Length: 158
Image 1 (spheres, rainbow, N blue to C red):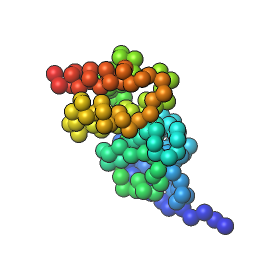
Image 2: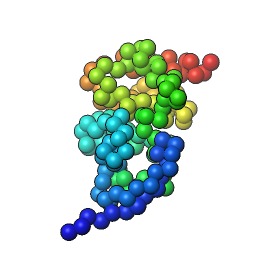
Image 3: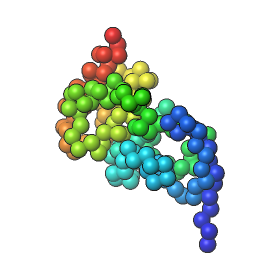
Image 4: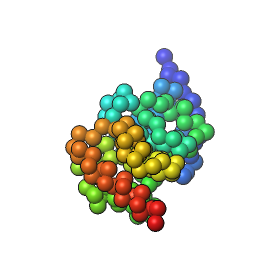
């Protein structure tokens, strides 16, 4: 029996991507295994931990709960898209400076969700509670991550 496939085209980190994929392929698996974008981490595979969060048309989504074929026609951004010409984004720098990461497993998903929140103009308080509340970090206790969010909002407001 042959597995059904579909050809999809979408923008991936600023470049057009056309691929034929099995229709049951998860977007997280497609990104990691087919596109070698291993910054998208897979933790719980139930959409709870947030490690697999990417942006689809600017909205944070759990890539472990989305099929690759659902990205057809969309704009997809992974953590690899945040640094520009080797220069870290403001929030990435803040995470480093404020010790907002330890093992780094949850970091890509947090980076993507907070980036989306900042682009959407969400408040620092809302980002620290609601946005960060959608991610599980087992190492940092969130103190450094919250400090990085505050620092980023302060620096980008100037």
